[in-house]
Image (cartoon, rainbow, N blue to C red; front, top):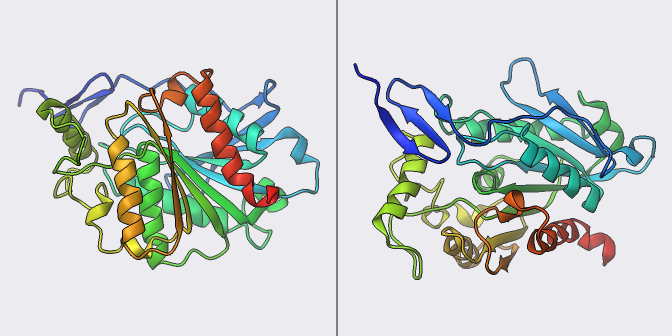
Length: 317
């Protein structure tokens, strides 16, 4: 059989019909370190011998010798479930800066990626990570830095794009399957990757653009019935009112094709009978994950301050 391109996801990746993947984006990695600019130390941890999932743990260096316990941020990277990793310089640098800004401990999740491990692998690994974090609640978990320094009554989840999609789906799961040992104080979904078969009002109707997003979803989840799958179109989920998170921040960007899905998420969540609080922050004039591609711009700084303040609101009140 001749090798052909099954999914051309350029400029991000190409997937061939023999199962081979050519990742064109997000392939560079950096080791954990002490970042002198932010004063944040990182290390990599394997969650367990029988799990494929691992994580990069970040903590302010000043907190290591302090008795103070810090809130915990569990972070899920983006990349359409297909490219990028928790080890990439993009995410490593961003987490260093966010941890320093908010004064938290972060667990950046390295989940399995499609197409080698199609969905729900990333969802399963992400849930495994939450349970691993929760295993430190009695002070005798596998990672000493969490035992000594983590305040598990104040856990936040954040992620961009596909990572924000993961957070939503963790919320649906936590509504059905109690997560003991941690209290999730809030979640931050940055430019969430949701889609649907029918265009929303004002959303693009260009067949080329719509088919590209459909192709991304098919490549990540070949067994899915399509873009009205509740995993990628929460408005189709009858379980939405049971979302396990009570405080939700959705961030959207003015030029992002996915912007309307973020607003639609707020609308459907608010109307579902869910009892929590949801807020949307829109950054005008910016595109999808602009804060990662241009972290030094003013709007990226404002977005980071918003995420940090979301995690410290109760302390400041």
